[in-house]
Image (cartoon, rainbow, N blue to C red; front, side):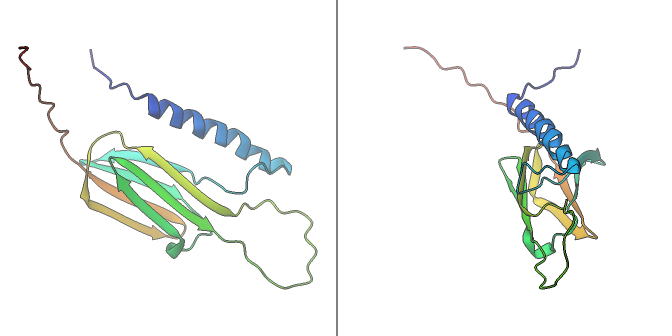
Length: 144
């Protein structure tokens, strides 16, 4: 039998992502319930590394910030609206602009000094080196 660590925060993150996807799908019908967007991402494990891949099209590299604190990875940035002075008459607009921020707890401990990130053609790739979790030490305290 395998023990699985219970992390209630992760369940809320999954619920948040599901709700966000549900309301995000309405934008295809001409509704827009949000001013910002949430990039889709994948997390995989390979050769002792965690790999995070996020689709962030239309965002400049300079407008992306990645932080790692207490095993929580945060990706944030801004997709700026193109402002052009023209006489074109918009008939329909479905693209979403604004700021975004995604934070999630990583499934295992990682070495914060061995993180590599690259951004190419709208795809953000982050590679994090896994480390062995610190052994929990137990100390018996004597009652007086």
